[in-house]
Length: 475
Image (cartoon, rainbow, N blue to C red; front, side, top):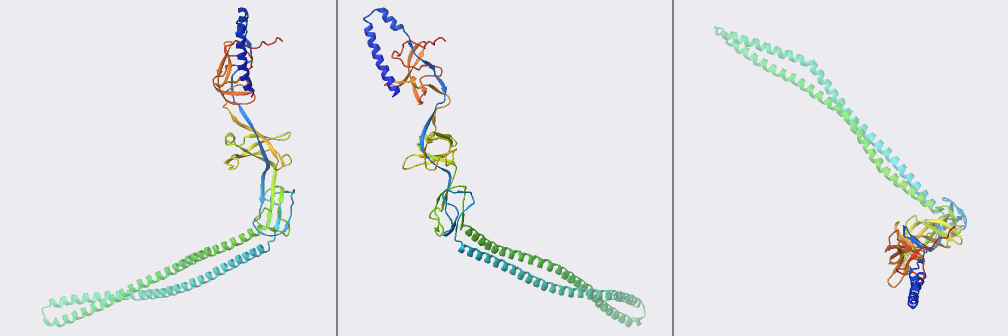
């Protein structure tokens, strides 16, 4: 409205001055020269660069920064309540209790079940240990019996070897000596010319064959002694090794079996313990505690009444810090940032705050976005539910925008324009403007920083007239 009035006045004064010039044409030339040469006195200011920031105000609603609705996990008859509306509570305080008789029984059952599982596990381990010990003893007895028999056989074979081996070797040597002697005698008899030795040669050959048969039997007996000793010694060593293997294998087998059993029983015990923990947790639900510190805003339970999950039992608000919720358009939302400073006014008192939440979903009914700001005030300063005025920065130019006084801009049918002072004359210059407030306006096209802008209006101000700045009074 202000600039529209300036635009209309400037057009009217231009017509008025045109009429004056026509009338002046009938007068003297000296009067006309005086009008043409008189300069218009105007205020001037150079265009500067800077940042122009706009502020917008919104109506918001106050609420506690932290508010919780206490809804019990368990249902039942309320036996005790400890706080009423307006009371202060601390986190962890017991708000009320629900009859927990059934939950206590369930806990006792779970504890008994867990104890029974532990007893069964101990019994199973003991039984398995005893069975394993019996089996190990039986295997060791069998191994010991085999070892003892092998040891006896080895001792017998060793004694037989020691007693008979040398004697059999001597007898074999004697047979060899006799055979050699008879063979020599046969050779001697065969070389004799007398034929009476023929029968003697036959007898000696017969003796040799007999000795060879005896020798063969003796060698077989001696070989049997050696083989028997070797076999007995091998059986003895095998039995001794078997004893050691039985001890180790039984120990390993027993240990592995016990470990497997322990793992299985451990799983059963863990399941039983989970049952106890679950019952303990269920029992804890019957004693309802405050999750935060604050003031009781509402109470929905009474002694002998029924508590459940359908309605909040208590509402608790932490009013040390308050929150203001307000609605903005999408364009304004896009100018806001987290942590941005705000000023909240209630009556004549102002409070500082900052934006803590910027909504991302539009309200389908209002078409606006919800914004929240934390305010440095408590519930006594800003009660829950009151309406307040909130002001914060919104639109702004860049840091190097061209800024001129708002009153320097005029408007006509072509657009917005200013008067620049160029070489002592007013030059009408059309400009493109952007943001403005009550005192400044930003110009994006038409003038440059440092241009001298005429900032005051005069009925004589028009394109091409001479202009001059006011003469400062001498002090």
